[in-house]
Image 1 (cartoon, rainbow, N blue to C red):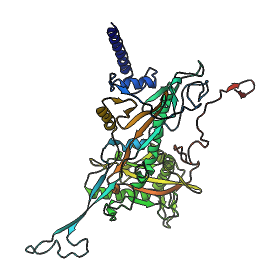
Image 2: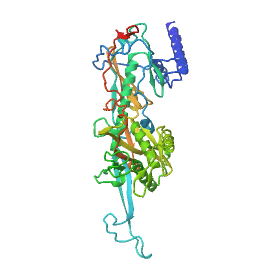
Image 3: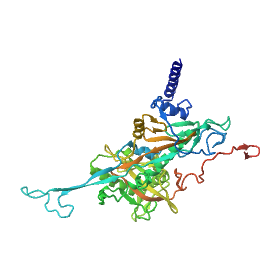
Image 4: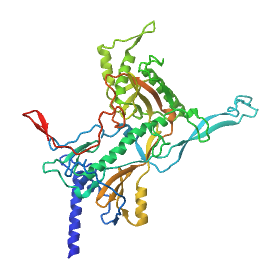
Length: 509
């Protein structure tokens, strides 16, 4: 009898979860006309991949202490009780540069890029060719000589973060019956209701790791424990092979702009547009010499911060309209309608919506990355401009890679005979999520093992130390930057509930 009741309840629960998963189409935690909890969405997705009959185990892992305050819910609160439930933010969007590069699974720690340097007559390297290719038909022809080398690409990084500790005995508490249920706008997902603090801390841990990805994709250094090489250490000169020989044919096209402004009046380079043109032509010459095909316009990006892209496009319009007099002076009518219309035409659109320029009939689209380093050379602000090629013909030369997470999680199940309770794969097998736990206190954690892989740095370029003097100081999305959008950063704490007295025009608690 009891077994029959249990079987009926199990079937009813399965039907309910299936109904929910179908309703929410468990690819996004919200429906077009429904208000779905983050927790419910996670459950609906999990029912499609986790056997509910699996044996799960858990042991006390570590000592945790939940903070006494700074909770979204419970008897304190991070926000007041009045106003709408939506929480807005400027740093929760997906990074377009990370999305454009793309990340793919890989399990090889050490990778060596193989190159042919040249093919020619024996004696070429020594500078003493004994027998030439041309000569008498009856004479012995020369033997060939060639050179090969390998360059090492760095290992994966390890990026991880944990949310703050949550006392699960307090989940469900509200300060009062008027406390709202908050929502967060998550790009690619939509408005998500955050119904408890554990959900919030899980999202916070993932966002923290994502932010570090946005930094390291530019400045990462494999020689720093846990980091991977970013573009600064990949798009460069000074490559050596594994034997210690200097290899110039592997170098990127690198220009030091020497902290000059976009017009290049001091360093003698001329306009930054002319230099981008020359860098691009150099890259295309190398691509043509490699015989690998042509890049598509969507596979090429000019990467720079948004504030620099505005100044860059202004210079593009000026460069396009300037006239050269016999005395060498540049004359341009900056305020004419034609110049402004030209600037507006190129100021948006392109492959990434951030504007574009054209060189030799090829469209170079600007991809804005607002996590790049900003330096100051008063009164100017300086950064780098990258010319990146993602793919040549059918060959992907720039990509992100990650260690797939299922191998480790699956190994525990295979060896121990059960699924480890607090470890699971997330983000389409890109990472691992687990819970640190101490009795009824838990802390959600996430971990990713990524790296950048560039096997043709000679097909990319960078113009370093480019400066401009914008009307406003640059703004960065990086909380660790001196140019972060918020000057007064402080850790979250419970808020005193304030009320506004319209009669006196003042606040009271």
